[in-house]
Image (cartoon, rainbow, N blue to C red; front, side, top):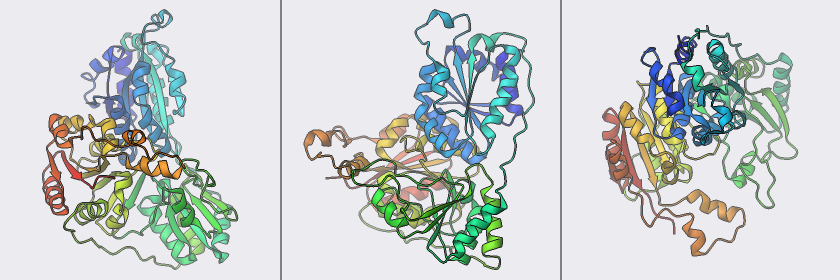
Amino acid sequence: MNGAQALIRTLVGSGVDVCFSNPGTSEMHFVAALDDVPEMRGILTLFEGVATGAADGYARMAGRPAATLLHLGPGLGNGLANLHNARRARTPILNVVGDHARTHKRLDAPLESDIDAVAGTFSRWVRRSLSPEVVGADAADAVAAARTAPGGIATLVLPADVSWEEGAAVAGPVRVRPPSRVAPELVEEAAAALRSGEPAVLFLGGDAVGEEGLLAAAKVAEGAGARLMSETFPARMARGAGLPDVPRLPYPPEMAISALAGTRHLVLVGATAPVHFFAYPGVPGQPVPEDCEVHVLAEPGEDAVAALQALAEVAAPHVRPQPLEPERPEIPTGELDGRSLSAVVGALLPEGAILVDEALTSGVGLQEMTAGAPRHDWLSLTGGAIGDGLPMAAGAAVAAPGRPVVGIQADGSAMYTISALWTYAREQLDVTTVVCDNGSYAILEGELTRVGADGEGTRAAQLLELGSPDLDFVALARGMGVPGTRATTAEELADQLRRALAEPGPHLIDAVLPRRK
């Protein structure tokens, strides 16, 4: 058995049976070994950023890692942005990065680079397999490292000759410790803060924003008179009728500061204390008030659900929270803008949908309009590196083939990884993409003002708008095998979204929004 065969068999035996790939010469024995291990599903992407983003979306929904197969240092480099998002989401991913044969490394071939150093910037675990005899054990260790709470990225560097040489053996799975329970004194400390009568916020992230965590948190909040709030971009959040409505901390710094103003106790549950994405002149770096005491109930990686349930028994033992009743917005008519787009999505979102949100500035009202929709999961752009939405939707669809995936996608961000549409078509993934087509990097227009830059001139504007020529998303989609339509009114969007959701396979709707002036 050669190294590649042992590697893939070990991955499958450890629960990793999907590999999003963009291979090259050094990975050809891995590719050939897929025929020997049919349990491993290999999915081709046309760009490494799609492979890494898809692995992110897959693991968020499956609760276990996918693998990526990347070609040398440049291939890894192409996938870095979405590995950054996955790191911030604490997503378990296993990267297999092919490298030159051991005898070739010293020759400094044109594609030679320091893969280990680059991988170390975002991976919690990096190892280079040095012989076929150890590659199976290395792979098992990599899976365990990725799966250990709170989850993270493991990168295994695989020299080409370790793949092709014989003498390898399959290794059994490595046991992974479950998330640790929080100490009882931390539960008591949080309960005391909530009993103080001072304004308190339960700040949720990680598994605390799954169904069980949200119900326990709602019980605590109602019993103690505290507010609930989540991270700005939670990795995966359960939402919809029957669950509490948990607002997210707003992204703009002035709104985030306002949302937490007056809070005297911030109780962190599966989340870290929030900070602004960027520094701004005259604005503090974090929105937490200076006189607010921060309490850590559960660190990321600890059992936040059990911690909330224990807190509920102490702070609100007899409380029954009031969840959201089913409620949908009316389908709007007339001009299509951010709010009417959100209303259409909220009115038509199917039961059990997975909503992938990279709407950015065009998502105004999206959370509000979908709050009482049928139960669904919401995946966010956790790390802020745009271009994750389309790939993440692909991975989510592979992980949950019986559930419809709806991607609400900003136009500028879509172009980073537009080739994900080709993978949708090839794999016939049930993904409906609504492109928020406002013809600009609108989020940067706001940031230009917020940081105090003087950018009123035409040269600055040229770096923020997407016209001249306009992007034709319908043509782009059709060119990659995805049916595409264009909507310019709320009625057209509603009609096209109904039809797309009723038909299996991928669809794209170009929702044309008012252009920025």
